[in-house]
Image 1 (tube, one colour):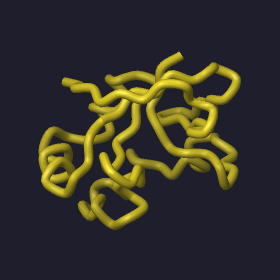
Image 2: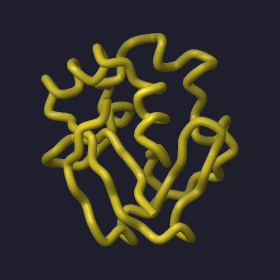
Image 3: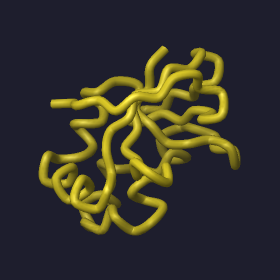
Length: 107
């Protein structure tokens, strides 16, 4: 299956990991933590989205513009479904189990 993740194009960290997600709206009730979404996170899990539409519901185009200025992009990972945990609004996956990574454009 494919999962979609916003991450820094060079170092692979997400915008919540390095304070790029600084808009208070990104921490409101519509943006629950993975645990609040029903995902039991483990140290080797990375947040992601199961569908591009989930990502675009979470992040506005203005968020993505700001992230791109800071070196972030959207990447699609191909990973077996048994290495993906699905939550209400987001997902998590084992990045080291993914076997393909490519930059994609979502609308």
